Image 1 (spheres, rainbow, N blue to C red):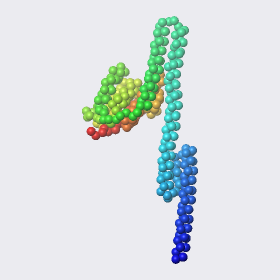
Image 2: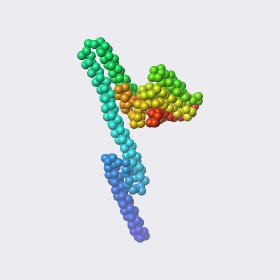
Image 3: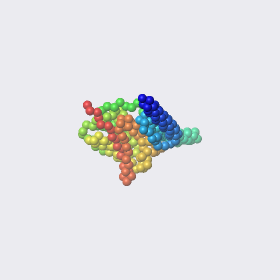
Image 4: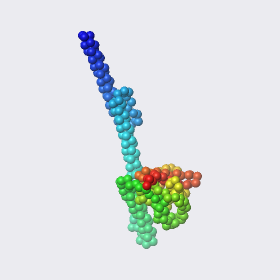
Length: 301
């Protein structure tokens, strides 16, 4: 009987020692995880915490920390990208405002030094053009600020054919004034997609405005059976590099014409909020610019 008690005590001591060792190893792993976590918080790295662990709770902890570090890394990159875009935006906006403002001041000085009615009339015309540029810029900035601050549009099934037809009709006179006779190829099939009427109309409007600004006199609009929508035109004024930046916020292709890049940036923002995509392709050999829009399939009725 005495031997049984001794064996039980020895077994209990062994179990206590094993448990103490396990606790010590657990504490060591926790400290190492904490050290690795701190290092990765303060270093620019994508390396994950890699602490060998068999304990399922430690594995769960490490997995959660790595996921958190990944999200933090993404937020950091988004913040850095946003900060850089903001600095570029301030530079571009300052340049766009300064150009017409400098001209306005210059022509006001010229008006003060001449009494020639013809010259004064010419200077007034130029002043009006420059003030119109500034008005257009401030209006586009206001529109952009409103759109980016709005909540995501409520999505429903939209009749793409009708919205596209109405947008083309609204700009037909403007296109004609630029000598642009659109080649419209629209499927007879009813195309419904998940979207928002007002948002999609705004997208088409901004694309048409872009055509009026850059087209060399042609425009082809296609709505396919698949639901894909394309706007294409010849744009010899653009280069491949410029096309890649067309959707960037505040990117300016032609400062003199008051182009801020906001129209296409707004179009991209709206399309992405509807869950779709919009891309620009450029064929240098033909100077052909193609805008392609793909929207999500409609909900089942």
